Image 1 (cartoon, rainbow, N blue to C red):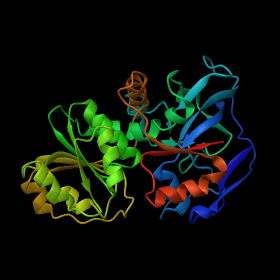
Image 2 (image 1 turned 90 degrees about the vertical axis):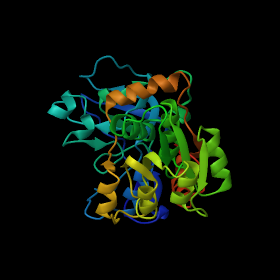
Image 3 (image 1 turned 135 degrees about the horizontal axis):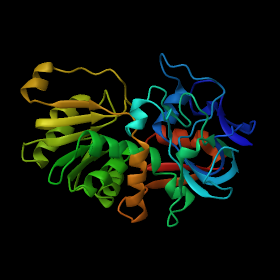
Image 4 (image 1 turned 120 degrees about the horizontal axis):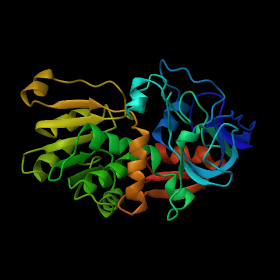
Length: 343
């Protein structure tokens, strides 16, 4: 098969479009012919290499896969060749206390398709467990549905499950032009919140408002905390949706109202931040971390995707052979929403 493969860590140029052995699938797996795969920041981190994280090379990235079932393992039931599917990205053991209680993203054996341990969807085929295969909504294209799983799952688990967003609250979405940021804006609006989204250009701010943001802040030219105070009449926000890290952390903390919650899932600008603990306890703030979400939440999200209340945000579709170019566009912040690769 053709695939975009990493043989060493580095810049976008290390992604090589080449012939690669077809994935082997076991009796309890299915082989999916990839029709579309979206790019996530996790792909960029894996390509660049992560401190204290070993990734077996060569490696194929790609967490968000949509396609057709090409082959079915002999032990798999209820799935047939030709089924059009979207792949839930989280893989767990299915037996531990966390999996059995519906918290499979807490599983000690948790992996992500295309993540550190498993090859993913930057290829013509990918092997996945049958419990990760979900019927594709008929009203969405392969390209659109590939923009949904990881980012909307992350945003949903952060805002709904962890931060427990409520109608009438105000949510500050950092990086509203990103895939996860555009998903967070929609999830917060779905639950009746007022959304302030930050973005780095006037064009991205306009697009953020088009998908539901009530107010926008240009984080390249404006002070996030000061603008947030102005927009909330000096009160601050109830929730900060954070995934940028070092460059926005202080302003994110300062933007919270008394009793506010900050939840984070990433560190695109750097993982090491400082915190004045006095500010934390005087304002009675809550800081939470998040990693993915459960398979049950994917199914819940799909209900709102099918009825049009949550919508994929696709900036562009590119051929798989242009994976390196696509990575560079994301690193240059030249896109709004998701970039989709098409084998």
